[in-house]
Image (cartoon, rainbow, N blue to C red; front, side, top):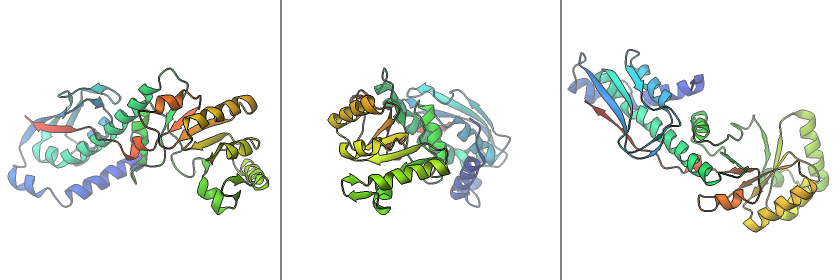
Length: 289
């Protein structure tokens, strides 16, 4: 993993937030000439992610700190596995500890959650996708963690792709009423997108009626929001029969218990916000030897 300028800046801001002017406790308790060796230990099983981030944190505090990785991103770990060893000045190691572990725990939690979903849909053609439901200023890192876990990234930001959602449809008066699309306006909208950009066009629908009305205008992807399993199957059958080139993206109320059933309906993508916004962090600790 090569950190971008944005990611490096994010890490620098995190260090500034945590250390401030200095680590008062360590500065008083530990002599500045003291050196030590430490190790980062997994306290539970998971998929490691964020090793380069952790290394950058320690080297940002002191470039002479030696950070040796024992596990690469994407590697499964179990409780008590040593993922890295660190050699350097004690003050610097302790000052960098919490920020490094926070990133490592967060990103490993995302990669672990993503891997759980990916494993559940093995044998199907579906791709597990993330969303923009990410932590502010951490999106690049969190979407990297999704890839490490075997998932795929939806658009990184608003400028990267087109998704016309329910609020767009209502605000732009693209609905005749609460349940029916305005065919004429939708047609003009899609033609306008085609003229102005080469980006793929994804439009959200909430009912089978909306799906059937929208499909004839041939967007690239139709987002099926909160469809029941029965209606997902009907949507796939309709698409396969009449509009086989359109991709279908299922989202809403999808979890580990039902994701395989959703995948088996034949949709192309499953977008899951919880893998970034509701994941459990993987616990790591740093121990000085």
